[in-house]
Length: 393
Image (cartoon, rainbow, N blue to C red):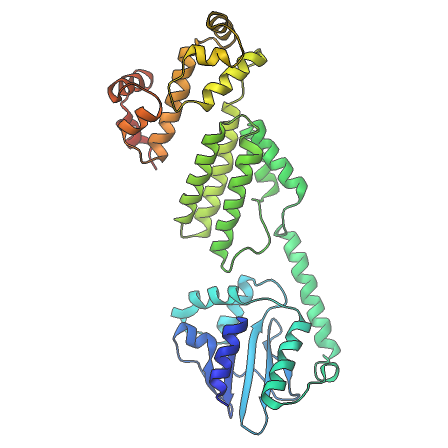
């Protein structure tokens, strides 16, 4: 049998690394082949006793060993993790396996991609390999009976991992935590949100969602962006279309980042941004339900021409009635509020979007680009292009 080909196929089918030794010298390593470096003989990971058996280079990195009887070959599978992969485990593997420094980052990414499993699953893998290679059934009860001290040590490690996870608050979010977080965003209370995040020393976390730590935090941000928008900002009064635009923009910005710290900083900024926008969308005290409905209509229809008659039709009132009530309750005319909402939308498009001035003015329902520029400059004392250059990230 071509044992190297057998190792390659097993690795391809299961994702579990394989290594093949002949008379104590390594002749094949799946990890070394993937990373394109020469494996070292110095990595001695077993003292043959049973066949098949568990093996390890230290108590945290577990392997399986099958001696191919009558050939001089020994097949190893692993490492296989029965606990969550941590940075400490990765460092231990890289040191014990004497991985060359230039391959350590790529090796760490591969380790995070190795499927985790239980000891019964590991036993089934080794039993299958023993049957294929030696044509014998393995007595799982006898051959895989662990010494009591080994079992105790594993139980202690599992307990330590669970305690460490709780202390580091790295377990999945509780319902209560998320409910409080998105409720604060909905209320638009940036002060309380900041205090809440500092007090808990916690950003939203999830269970393992990716193979690498960087991909993990990016995936978490994507989930948080959607929930912060849909459960916090929209119920807090932020325009639906604007929320979806912001979700997409934050996700795109996240994907361009190269470090975990950058993603976490962006996540904090994003939460505060949604909260601040919800706070800014809160209606002034004393605004009636009718005028509230009119204001929401205007906020949701900035992408087009809006007239006072259009707004009045939403509450089945005359334009003159709306004009009087709107001015009395908000302190500004309907037309001024329409302009205010359109220009706020223009600011977002200038900072975050790629549309030209002509496209923005047409999108917002202005009769011409020059008219849009004049209205914008009158409000902000600078031209739209100057605003874009000054504020764009």
